[in-house]
Image (cartoon, rainbow, N blue to C red):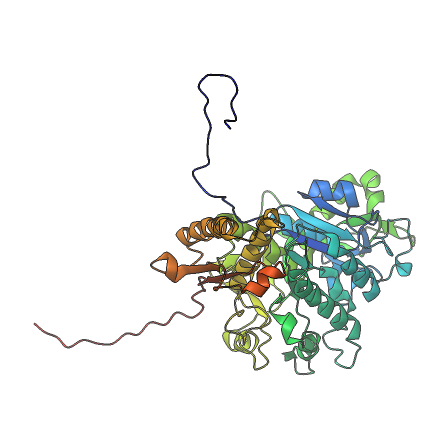
Length: 497
């Protein structure tokens, strides 16, 4: 019987094309660390202003400014043992460096057990503990969107580079947990797969040579290694250090060289800053000597720039590269912004041992090149001895495609497991991979060379699979791999005329 009851003309529209999907966002990191304000939630922020509003500002540090040589020394209680210009708590600065290098939306997983001390708080009671990081990592199984995970402040758990006899267990434990989170997220239903981005901490011998024995010990499990990557060394940034001016003591005398206007003669004038035995603090100079205050602030702004581990800035590079080229482009040979220089110069021979170590646990290096700037000069995962997962962009490309297909396939759960549904699923995946192939993510002169999708009875499924409610799809891709080594061969030709 006709569905119509009233005479007339009726129009129906029918879709001519199958379902179309695109890659989900690929560079959304979650930062684990200490903040001034927190409520135990994992919150998304899009810029530094939002971070400050939700989580507070940086740790205001105290110290001593020596006017005779314009030097600043941070009080030991406030500084990291790894650098005099790295505060004990520095997540704020890491987030700032992330945004200045092209980062976008990110998640902040603030540690509840310890807050960044305010000026009126006792810095000596503030502790950094591996259990703090581990508790937050357990909460990430409910976070859906994040694709990268890092905890820059975990480096504070490592002993000094020269303290080869120190305990590395806490640092190794957090590194291992971060890699495990990357591995576990890939098999977790309802969340995105994640790559762990680590800061490699070395040991240093009495002669100055470095090794990464303890860092490598933290990533010994082979099944986790392809879900992580590591970077070295620390970076001298252009980000000024936030000071508690009421606790910055100004000391010493200052010798000025005065040049007469009408002659080339000059003489030295010694100006005594401190006229009593009482300490003079920077904030008091605002009213007692505004000119000197402005001069010291300018000197501090030029001289006192923070040192940071590289992971936050590198994750910003990931976001910048994904936006300009795509997740399939290796995030390397790309300049780091807001960086003056790496704290340690790595030569070709030194990088050879890090990029292709016998253990296969590659460490990517930040290097300075004349005329090119400070570049990320490595694109390997911690599983560099695997031909499948050696390169970061290949690992991230597969994670992105897997997540997108998994998310899109939810609509087919409980649909009839028949040819009609199989064709819809295949067309949906084909639309994604075809688009990526045309953009250069996959290599091949034809579609069949670039990717293949299989689904169906006798192909990927047996009759028993269908009886058990299983729909199985096999996707093969030929990813674009980076040209890591470029070799020219030159030879002379015989003169022919």
